[in-house]
Image 1 (cartoon, rainbow, N blue to C red):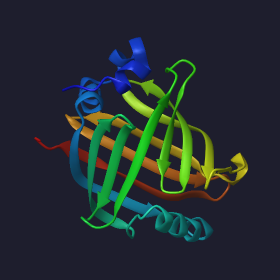
Image 2: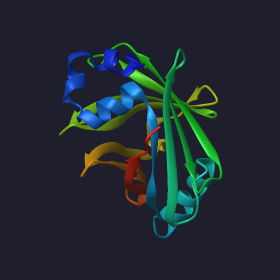
Image 3: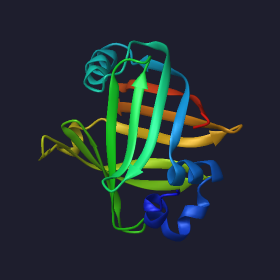
Image 4: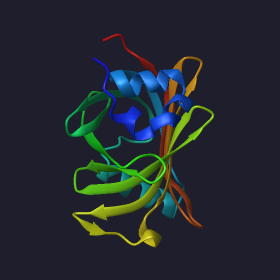
Length: 182
């Protein structure tokens, strides 16, 4: 049965999302495919490797990513697993509505206050605030996040990148995932 959690948060703007993203966020599902993980060079790479370990990301290169999406009373669940190894679970709880609301993503001891922009049917996260173990982290210490999901040729295009001013990209992963029939 479809879940209206995401649809209710977006309200009238839900129809601006690509139909496959609408389906994914009302019915849930499982996405699989290869993603390319890369790290920055020099100091950016050193910081990127440390950040990636905290996020349970594998080494640089091509890796299988499986993402399971579901809903329940607690919120929207995104469970990511690279190479059938470490499972990273995130819970997204909606607050308010798209115009003045946000999502709280909790992954382990980290929580982020995020909002969403819709561009050409794609879902683009925008980070507003980060807490670690319940304590706010100053914005200047937080890597800039560029994270989105769009649709390309019927597949789900994922891009996640963390960077810092001046030194550049720390770590990123991106790839095309296909929906599995569940």
